[in-house]
Length: 461
Figure 1 (cartoon, rainbow, N blue to C red):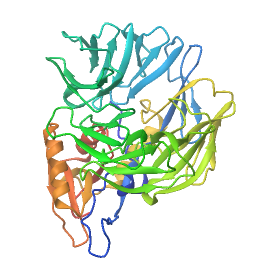
Figure 2 (cartoon, helix red, strand yellow; figure 1 turned 120 degrees about the vertical axis):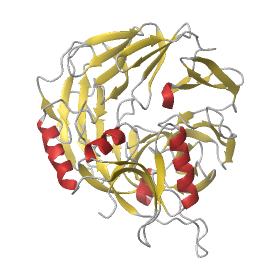
Figure 3 (cartoon, one colour; figure 1 turned 135 degrees about the horizontal axis):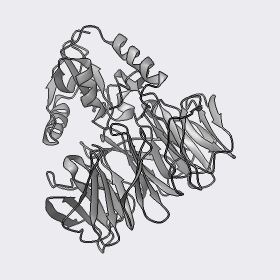
């Protein structure tokens, strides 16, 4: 189990990252929101380089992209795409050109075949890996245990997402398209959805957004809420949820800039101006930065979400792995034949790996056991809080008690012991928390499993 990664801090406005709920509207402004600065934990970051022609992966410490030798072992074949990394179990999951799904134990270097003949794969929020083969059969891998589901899906999914409670959510490309929810111990539940284009899901898989000709349809995969539709003045092209799942960012087909939808209020909010229409979106793991791909040319626009402002651009080709924002907040992208890491606010170069643009890259908060970064961050965590307990894992703060209550209910339905702490001071908000826990180690262990931004809250501190 990797040790604590909560240690480098950056001030982030939670409105921008989606963890800040909307405040109640005031008479002076229709729908304006109170913005409250919070401090979110930035995790130390590493970059894993997978040779395009196969071979032993290489590890680099961010932000300098300093190579760490002698840590990664195990030779890989040529990799077609990366499915994901689970830092807790220390597994990297990749798919090969021969449609094999491989699990790489980052600690030991062992490479195992999870499934063959796969057509889709996804990594769930709890680290469970799902694979669907050409015969519609599902294979899952959880805590190093492989399981072949007894019932196949009703079709080969076009989109696939892991959800809470080891559920699988996806879209079948039928006419009309169908949304399915499946689990290993029950047959898939399937229902028709609005015909459309891009599909996105929250990190927890508790809400699916589907772009249509005139707006965005919202679906609860297990049917706890009725579907909703948010109409937009221009056709949506690409969708991306904020890390908390509170907001949906939408690239429009003909209009420059982004539209923004509040998933709870089910309405469009103020958008984000861009130089032109965008074709694809990619978000920072903590929601501070958004990257947008323009419809023309090879570049990435950089958006500072707390202030809703386009702050710069870098010339780069857009691939499934890069450009991306790393867990420590660096922008990593291909520049010519090299891969570089820069600060997204100033574009100051922090590190570079020459002649590496042809390889695949994975950005992760995983840290090798016993690395210097691990010991440094552990000391920083110990210094960040005084006496132990009671401690809470806080996932949101809002001036709106109704919104906080709904979020706590959603977390409770997902199997988490959530509650709302009322304000202690006049300028405090309603905190949605998990806990309490007696020690910081216990609180951090729960927080790391959330798959969403969190911070540790101790009353009175």
